[in-house]
Length: 350
Image 1: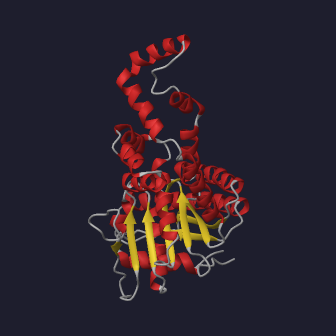
Image 2: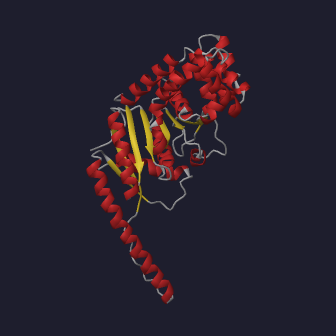
Image 3: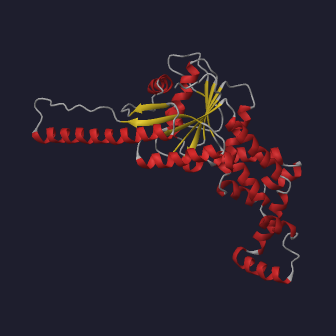
């Protein structure tokens, strides 16, 4: 089986943390750009490792040009997601009036929500992807997603935020007119809340929730747009992981959730595979050095056997095109090395 790059426009690079998916995303984007495609690579990884991989001393939410060695005509842009900036754009999109937008953006609780509410970062990421997907500026878009435990929030986040705003408890607060008119039983509950949170906070919360009124439908509509984009045949979901028991188990669960959402996994990349080790008896080495070399070679051989076992398990459980990437001792912050990695990604699928 081969990886059909030409018919795909959006590449979502998912996987657990620490397996090299940020580097894989950068390498794939470089490869696509050198093929002549106008390419954009977005990272939603808070660690900002992509900046180093692409040779930037700094990385911001603005688009930055990447110079591809040996390919002066290659068009590659890169950007880091600024979740607060893009969540502001979400509010601007769905606010029913300039007054509503102003009230929300100036509310301190809104800033707290953006920083701490689960899914807000991922929602902003999908907003930005939808923004670029709707324009013809780029032929290919590569998205470096958060680690596996958060990646599913990329398509669930809009619905979660809509549910948050539409929650019956929040609507109950809204319907109480700023917490001022309560029945006797409600007043007792309110006094307890005021002791813990303070009356000023509760009044501010009521105003904030009232300001959000009417925006639920916008979030739900974007949720459907995200799912449609993920299910589109021109979108390719790529899972990057390693051949070990823990990674296998979490990857299988991840795949099940993708299937439940009707999202197809197109490519599996097993990164940092150990290559065959050869014992070398260099003349002049001490006995201790030779023993160390022998023990290390034995360790690598055993590791290869373990990786082979889980590689076979992956291929059975996830029957999709698979690329094996050997462990690389070279610096992957070097663009020439990323070029080599990108070529190996797109030229070898089994």
